[in-house]
Image (cartoon, rainbow, N blue to C red; front, side):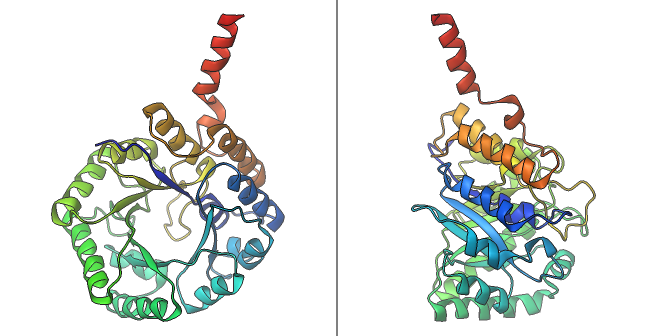
Amino acid sequence: MIPASVLITEEGPREGFQIEKATIPTDRKVALIDALSATGVRRIQVASFVSRKQVPGMADADDIVAQMQTTPGVDYTALWFNDAGLERARASGKLTLEGKVRVYPSDVFMKRNINRTPEQHLAHTHAEIERYKELGIPVRDASVSNAFGCNFQGDIAVEKVVECVGTLMALAREHEIEYEKISLADTMAWGTPVTIKRVIGAVRDRYPEAKLSLHLHDTRGMGIANAYAGLEMGITKFDAAVGGLGGCPFAAHKGAAGNVCTEDLVFLCQEMGIETGIDLNALIECAILAEDVVGHPLPGSIKQGGNLARLREAVRAGAAA
C-alpha cells in the first residue's frame, strides 16, 4: 500500500508569510521562493490574493509574483477566495492558474473564514466553477477544510466528511469536471494517525474513485505521524511547508503551527525508500534561510538534526580512511 513516489506541494511562502506578525520585505520572500525553486520541488504556492486589510502579510502578493524567478518544470500557484483575487492572479501572467473547489464540514469556521452560510457558499461554488470554465481555467483541486476537527465546532463526524466528499463529487458530475485530487485538510490539527486512517478509509469505502491528498498541520506534534499514517494508506500527494512555516490566520488558536514540515516529510520518504524528486540537502538550506527570513526559530527537526544520508556517507568515508 505504501507508494513508490509522492508529490509534495510546497506551501511555505503562502502559509508562512500570511501569518507572520512582523513585516517581511518582499525581496526576502522572493529569495526563499527562488531558493525553493532549485530544490526539485515541482509545485510551490507563493501567495494569497486576499484582503490586504485582513491578511496584511500578503499585502505584497502582486509584487512577490512580479519579482520571483520562474524555473521550468515548476508550477507556481496562488490562493484566492473571490473574483477580485482571481483577477489579481490572472493579471500576474506568471502563475499556473487552477480552480479549486472548497467545502466546509464546520459551518462556524466557514463563516469566520469566508463569511458565508452553507447555502451562500454552495451557490457561490456553482457560479465559481462556471466562471473558471468560461475563462478556460481547469478545476483540478478540491478540498474538505478542517476535516478532522474544528476549534469552534469540536470533533467532525466521519460521516460529515464523507458527506462533504459526496458534495464535491456531485459538483464534479454536474459541471463535468474531474479533480486530480481531493484534499482532506487538518486545518486546525485535530488529526491523529488513528483518525487519519479512519477518515481516509471511510471516504474510500464510499468513493473509491476519489483521488485523496492530505494537508496536515503540526500544532500538536502529530504532523509527521499523520503523514506516515497517510503513506500507509497509500496517499501520494501532500502539502507541506519548509521549516514548518505557517498557520491559518482565522483558526484563532494560540500556538497554532504551520503545515507538516517539508524537509521532515522528505526525510521520512527518503528513509522509507519513497521517491520525492527533492534534494533534501538543498531543502535543508532553504529551511535555514526561511528561519533567517522570519527572524525566529522554526519547528522543523531535520534542519537541526541533519540528513542521515549525509551522515552515513561521512561515517563510511571515515571508516575507509
